[in-house]
Image (cartoon, rainbow, N blue to C red):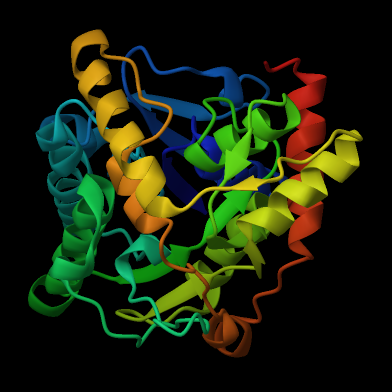
Length: 328
């Protein structure tokens, strides 16, 4: 069984890679030129250089593959050039799925995000049928992923592309080399760079459980269906408290109102436009934090046999990995 993975150099994609290699799959990965290859160093796998926006480079990547895990995405909460994110997440996804379908790939698992889903105003967990619209999407990342998922659904309907969609929540764990926005929260907390926090909530899941959910979706997922791959709902306060207790440091005691941070985030973004460096706080990030981003994985558990360990195990593995790798 030959399998192609995109995004294998990244956090979630590398977890999918580790799982498939351990399961004995013949793995090929598509990577961009000048990509950070750190997460691939220990594996005897086939590497194809290419770009999602270069359709010619995708043909050798999908050739002779039986399955495709399209995990790659531009995941940032602030970008100096939003158009580039749209091209990668929407156009690149369309290009790859069409190339794979034309090449006769039997099954595709597309990694979307819970960012595309609706949020319940009362704070109860949302699921796959909670209503959402483009107008509900806050920020370039969420809008790009929402439109990308709509594009995939259109390809399934119109082009008979064999795609199952998965919607991971907030993965945490080892090998977050970049790190991701959530990884930055963990790192800032354990390095005493979190003087205050806001009231919000996230669905936290171990990255290896999300990877296992991808494999289950490939094996059991229905074409055209989507499945939330999540874990435990946790308030940001409880996440920070767990991390601080684990590191034996004092947690921040100041809870800031969202509207207090908005003008600070605006100033930071103005500075970032000149420096090109990602701001510590973003307007979109503050706006998103006003909602409790809680989700239910009941459908994946029922239909796929999906399982997730306690979210604190993912947080524990993340902080241990950051400490082992001496991240500052």
